[in-house]
Image 1 (spheres, rainbow, N blue to C red):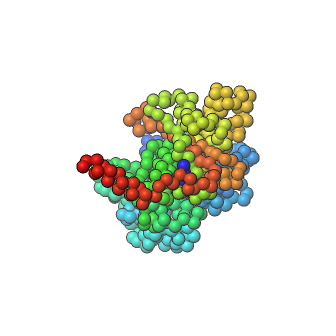
Image 2: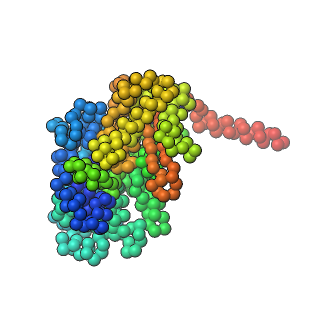
Image 3: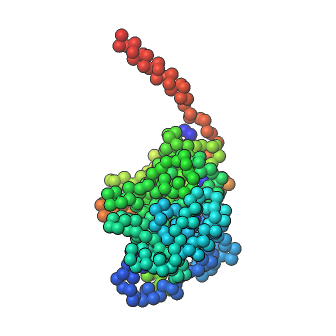
Length: 513
């Protein structure tokens, strides 16, 4: 069987402290219900600078400048031990500052909802046009020449038209208007979240093209898998983020659609992309997702209470290229896909059995045949102070315990197994962003260098958040080294198929005589 391959990845971060303060849902709710709260008063003392965010070890791992396992060698807490050689540019992507990001939001806005102060707009337009990635791949930067405004005009829109203010270093630099006077799906709140997700997703897509020498017009299909929903009052989450993002980056030959399944959506999307490529429907597919402004500062109260910086100050985004087998890139094993079935049950052991052990055993393998697992790679410095524990470590312990129960490992090997198959969490808590996918860039390097042969990517989701079911979700897939065989199972070509059909039709016609 000729499998599809993983051809390239991109991971990007946008440092957005002002968006955290004004648009993160925890902070926004606090402003509405308790505007004089101690938490809101303490926020300014807990915000990080852009340089602080860049030098933070997990962020450097996310964009590819260090391997996640190198975090084991950095003294904790990591936020107190910044990396001296940190860079905004990484092997897989880069980090963007908030002042550029508002310009990005305007550049992807097709309905003149984003209004920027004229001098700021002129400045950010120049920076984005000069940017080696966005300036090259985004085809809508002319939007940054349109409808600039004076501050008093922006203030009037905020006061009279329910526009959302845009702040930079707590200074007003623009606003975002509602898209409809009374449609609850097109309010300024919703449009803000949608444009944030679209702009950050388009940023990651441009980085994918730049880092992997991919031509935008060579992409056939886009699958967008964030957690936002765009639509209007008649179809509140109808989509399509995928095509709207592809439009920004000049993917003129692509179509696309959105996949939603909370945190597990990226893993579902990768399986869908692999299946479509293997079936011959499309040759080059990109799976991508933008970030979530709602989740910025999501655990902020716990962080402030314990004296931490507000570490959830970055939007995460990614893009992954899945293509036809080239004989060298790591393959995606479409014959080894795990799924949490409706009848699997909600116990942690049942979930791991369904999405880890079952697919491996079906393929004649066991837990020990996978070198590295990647599941829910949330940064523990964010989740532990909030009471959620070290989520990646909990997953690794459960996988190792399942191996002990099946007598694959001895009980006294558990700690070593956990260390061997895992890595520290390093992804921002943006829901869909940490769920397995952030390791793919590192996995390609490790597989192609021969350091590992096989990895399993695991996506898990909480479907009960939608208040429609109490079910969990989970799906996994295998990525492994390419054996170099491309044509071993090509079967018959199109002309042979046509000939076979013609012969069958002739025989059928003869049988009726």
